[in-house]
Length: 490
Image 1 (cartoon, rainbow, N blue to C red):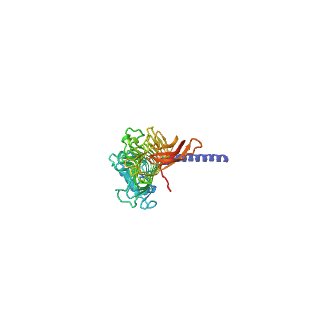
Image 2 (image 1 turned 90 degrees about the vertical axis):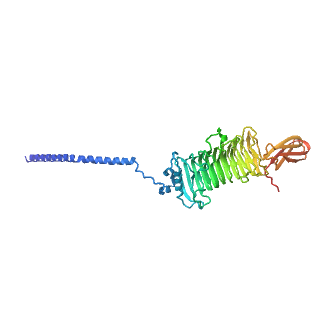
Image 3 (image 1 turned 180 degrees about the horizontal axis):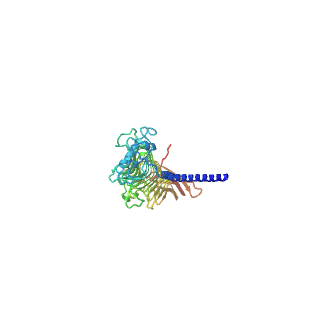
C-alpha cells in the first residue's frame, strides 16, 4: 500500500514538472521567436553587404589635378586626357597638350645627359590612342630636356594652322628662355604616331638636337617637309611611312606632287626601313656623314620631275646609300665626294645622275646594284655637265652592276677586237661613263696561228678608244681592259 502511494506521488510530481516545462517553453518560444528572426535577418544583411563589397568597387578616388605632381612624377607617365585634351579631335587640344609638355619639363634632374640638358627621367607623354586637333605647333620648351618619349596617338593640323610650322617642333628658336646648352634636346623619342599636316606646313622638325629617334610614324599631307632635321647629331628615322598624298602609286595627280618627305640638313643621321610614297623629293641630304638603308622611294617619277634621293652638298657628300629601292625615281648627287651606292634596286628606268657644280667627282662607288627598265636606251648612270664639265675625276668605281632593259655605264670595262691585220681598235664609248678619259689600259694580243710572234704595242688611247698595232699582219684577238679611276704612279 505504501509502495502504491509512492508511485502515485511520483507520477503526479513528474506530470506537474512536465506542465511547468511546457508552459515555460511556450512562453519562451513566444518571447524568443522575434529575436531569433531578427538575428537571422541581421546575419543575412551582413552577408548581403559582404557580397556587395565583393562585386562593387570601392569608391574611386578623385584624380589629382595636373598641378599635383606626386603620383604622375613618380610614374613618369603623363596622360594627355588628364590635362583636358580631346581624343575625339572635335575640339582644339593645343593648350591641353602644351600644358602636358610644360608639366613634364618642370620635373627634371641634372644628371645623365649632356651638360646643360635637363634629364626628364624617361618620362612618357601618352596620347592614349586618341586623335587630337591642334592649331599651333607642339613646341618643346626652350629650356631644353631629354630622356623623353611621346607616343601612342594621332595629331592633325587645324584649318588655320600656320603653313610654315610643324606639328611637333624640337626647336628652341623663338620660344622663351634660351637653353644653357648649344643642343637643347637629347634622347627624345617620337614613336607610334600618325601626323596629318592637313596641307598646312610640315610634320616634325628637329633642330640642333642630339640622339633623336623617330620610329613607326605615319606622316601625311605636308606641304614643306614631312621631317626636317637641321643641325645637331644622330637623328635616327626608322620604320616610318611618309607621303604628301595618300596613294599606293600610279596616282593621276602625281605630276603635281610637291614637298620633301625627309630633309636632312645635319650630320651623322640615319634613315632606315622607310617608305616614301608621294612628294616631289623623297630624301634631301645637305649634311655630311649620313646613311640611308632600306629606303623605298616611289614618291614622284623622274619622268614627272621627281627625285627619290637628292644629295645637295657639293664636295662634301659623305653619304652611304645601301639596300634601297628606287621605284621609278632616281638619285641625284651634286659634285659627289665620298659617295657609296650599293646593293640597291632601280626600277622603271630609274638612274643615278652626277651633277657638275664645280666639276668635281671623287671617291665614288656605285657597285653591285640592279637596274631594270623598259628598253628605252636609258643609261644607268648619267652626267649633267650643263654648268661645266667634270674636270677633277678620281677614285671613281662604277662596276659590277647588272642591267636589264637599260644601258650599262661603268668606269671599268673589258673588250676585245678580232682580225687579220696589223691594227686592232676597241671602242669603249658605249660603256665608259666619262668622255675621253682612260687612265689605265692593259691589253693582251693572242695570235690565232702557232709559231707567230709579232712585235706589238699600244699605239693610241684617246676618245675612249684603244688602238694596238703589230709590225706584221697576223690573225689575232686583242683583249683590252681599261679604267677611268685612279692610277698610282711612282
